Amino acid sequence: MAEEHALVERLRAGDEAAFDDLVARHDGALRRVARTFVRTDAAADDVVQETWLAVVRGLNKFEERSSLRTWIFGILVKRAKTRATKDARSLPFSALEQDDGPAVDAAAFGADGRWASAPPRLEGDPETGLLSSELRTQLLSVVERLSADQRAVITLRDLVGMPATEVCELLELSDANQRVLLHRARARVRAALVPFVEVGS
Amino acid sequence: MRRWWRRRRHDHAADPLVCQEFVELVTDYLEGALPESERARFEAHVAECDGCAGYLEDMRRLLGSLHNTVEPPPDPGTREALLRAYRELRGGS
Image (cartoon, rainbow over all chains, first blue to last red; front, side, top):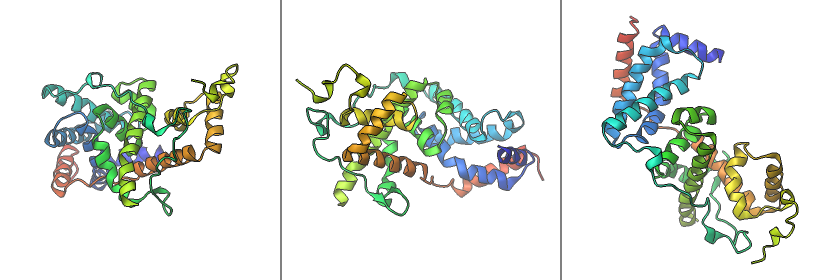
């Protein structure tokens, strides 16, 4: 936190390298989150640019009660929602078709509720403990195909790495709803990656 | 239909979990949102089921990979324009 305070102080003092660094670090994720609210890349670009300007103007008012990152994403979400309403392309979470489907298709299980056969594995990379590089190249496009609400939650939680409480606040979700959306999103992403494994092996 | 895991119905917490339930609990487990008794059932199941252990490991790999995903950097034009705006608004040099 002390480190973060020092960064905020540098940003307030006009440290260009610190600002450039901040932009490099968050711009892509901001764009990705903005895009879950607005319909076009151009609109997302506008929203992100507005957000950065608001950040620069608002630095003195930032009270450091949340992390700098959460403060920035809060500004973004507010502006993205405004923009979506203005464009009348609003995709309010509640209006979206509900995804109540299971994490794994019921056909994968026998009548006793156990795996009918061993479930397919996602190929891993033994060196990094992550998915294989081939699967990792698919991740972002798979996330992009999720419904807007699932996409917003998984992007903030798992790509940006924001804690659940902050995501609930940002997206005005209850704890339980946030978790359901996250659960569905993760399960959908896993399911979407499975075919890439089967083709590869 | 008789389900083997429903037989010991007198004590729900002691009922073993089946795989189909397991996959629905994975997020709650990873989020630390499972009540203690559920967590014990979850861990007992994963200890004896290779399919579910693999599923959980894949999910962890997936989350690690998402978190390690590098976003494309902003294009140089955008970056330069933002720096210019920052310079003007923060009244630096």
